[in-house]
Length: 467
Image (tube, rainbow, N blue to C red; front, side):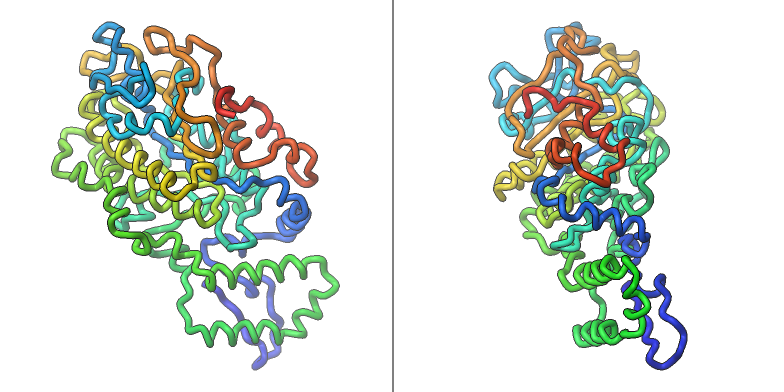
């Protein structure tokens, strides 16, 4: 909520902490050092930042390279995709047969078949880990761009979990890592996390008559004594900017970007993955039933919301639904064939809808989509038809952002378990993403950026063939 105190009826001093409060959005958490750092970066941001956005769809649990984008149908039966293969629009390239819609769009995105995450541990290392300073990649970006767009008051870094589109969904799954971590950068740069119409999302909605809002602006303008007290302070300019941003958050309807009811119902239906897998069709033998159900019910709408946010100026959107790609064929998780029906089909449907939507809007140069998990799956099926943890190779899909599309980058070995060409690593993925969002040459000579951040930005090499 935006909260102001009228001290015209009393003599108590207006405290800085009472001056501005935008619940959940984080403006009130900006300290003087943050303000000074943001102000110092202000002059260089225009040339430092590119007018682009990233949607990072994290496939938690470790997706199988075989059943997604590298089926290896020439390999023995215990290795090759259990779902078979489907021809794509690219000559000689096939995907696992569940990727039916994406196969028809294969000329619009690129697949990396030599991506290595480095270990077979369940975590969230490709988006939050040692290669990202233990901060969400979006926090690295917002440390450069600032937590809000000055022109639109849109948060630059957002994380979308199922509760963003469904109040009945489970809370964000953080057992293996916190997607909202900002590492050493502090809470100012944490991703903004909308709920399902409540909490911080409600705080961003203008819930007072226009006249009352104007009265409060007039009240602020009349606080001469408070202004005199701050006049000698360097913080005045910064606080004035924050005051303006706070009003902009409310008056410019930023919350509309989080409201899917503003979309054409036909487009919502195209994105919607809920009809693909009603909960009644998920076997109760799997302990992971709740995650499967939430994934199917929300994935499409989360990606639609992500597109809306990017279209309105958000720079980085993390999307994840839950722990659904771990296909061991044990008490918790379904085997690969069943698991791809539970998880692969909603993925194929939602991601293809997003690509078609972005293309129709002419935003393919502006929005980049990254799809990957923390690892891949073992080349050899286990005795129950599942695949186990595997750090030697993992699927990676990249779309848009002005990069070169319609190709396969790198090669995998005949057994699909390791690269047969130069490995692409997490630092390379980070460099590719940051190359899309930021002018890395300008970043190297920009004052005010932490040395550790610059090191992360430049440690890897942007993926050859894409840039």
